[in-house]
Image 1 (tube, rainbow over the protein chains, first blue to last red):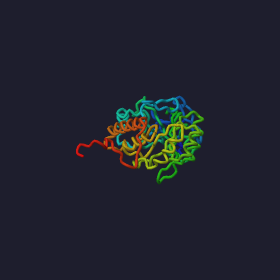
Image 2 (cartoon, rainbow over the protein chains, first blue to last red; image 1 turned 90 degrees about the vertical axis):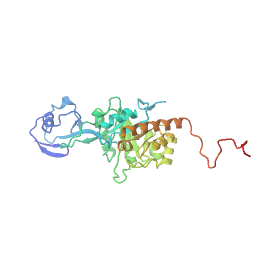
Image 3 (cartoon, chains in turn yellow, blue; image 1 turned 30 degrees about the horizontal axis):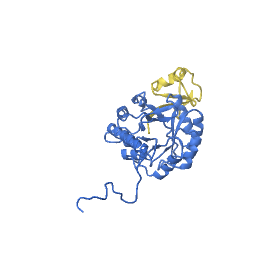
Image 4 (cartoon, chains in turn brown, orange; image 1 turned 180 degrees about the vertical axis):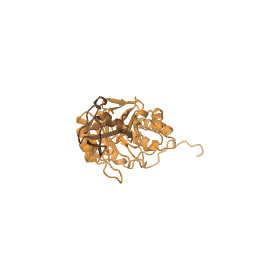
Length: 64
Length: 255
């Protein structure tokens, strides 16, 4: 299936958000997950990925 | 000393700090402890999957209030989006609106900032808008529901001090919300000057983070802010064109 991850189109066999996060080693504290512009809570990582989903992985960083 | 109120929050310490540019993030918590700063900024970014930077919040003690900024936003719409994500991600109700599209001087876009303030304050955010010092902008921000207005003293990261002094004084005299001078404050004497002018607080990042000893510099800034605030509350003596002797001009010993 085709998804967009942090602005890049990507083919994936992962079935859920959680699987996708594990595959890119981002099932970690400090990662903010956006699915189609909505922030997901951890218990929502079981949501199934769908064709053309847009996933953004964000984090708070240093800044003034 | 009397507390600074922003939204439903109160702050004893009027030095706000930033997490940017520290060469070692471990210095941040020590700087916060020594300066007693109670509010610190963070930014929100896409994770670099090859080189993730995930742990800034772990360096900030829980009793320090987070002030996420909307840096990277070029329009009101982008700033609004970042603010909503930051709050949903558990960063609290404070937001520093920062909308910049001028990449040379990094001057904020006041018009877009006013638009974002209107929307976000209605959504219950405690909005601290970062703007170029302009009286009408400050008046409009107050009407739009901003909790404070944060004019820059000089371009961000420049350490030039308060080159926009006269313009900021107009804002302080006019608006009924706290005025926090953000950006350009390069040394403790600049911070003291800001507070003497009647600023409610200052936000200092670069001057602390890139100092030889950021921890001691945080402490120095805190003292300057406290001194400047006390001086303002004590009402400064008038400046005069001519000299005015402090000792009696009569009864000299050798006349």
